[in-house]
Image (cartoon, rainbow, N blue to C red; front, top):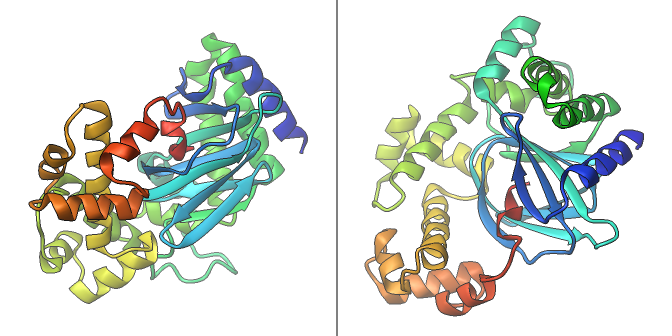
Length: 306
């Protein structure tokens, strides 16, 4: 697509080093990788991600999503995922653009555009579907993103024009194949937002034990309904979600805070060092010390989020 070519050329001028680069435009990040990466675990926040060069795969539970410059990815809730750039080179680096989704803006836009009715083919919004989806990127969406990223070359225009371009991007999303999912993000009483309340509670209390009854009360759902919708959104149970958060945080503490494995495990809620080591190895493919030794020097650690 012409727009993808222009975006790739623009990112080539704006980003010369590998990594995730925050920009002067709120919620907008540019990502570059000059080589394929190892599978990287991380927590992906609600966002729109558009690849303009290269290819990437994302794993949520047992489901693998492969997308490239002809597709975009939408994440609607905080999800522990595994991301891997699978196509990139020095001559043609992987480039992507990430725009974090703001529920307040989505809600305001939904009210202004009166787009809160289910459209033909979208299906019912009574249930909560997967919190991650990949779809073909329409030219209109790429055009709006191109105009937003271009503003980085004229910083004096950002304050006035960036909000307009972002509104158009959200408008295109809310009138595209992910319209129902975007409206659920914007609607406080939707099943997705109820699951999101449970996710927020787990994130704040990931190091504590909890019962499904307490979590269901936080989400204003019955325990059976919460379990059903939570798994539909995240592809895992609440306890599996908590375990992934614990292990990812422990990995961060060992890597970034130089804690030993036993101390990191205890910090995130594990009472048994052997259980911590066993579950760490099961998730990351190696025991803590060997895994962290492999990660040191891996510049693509943050690439999971784009």
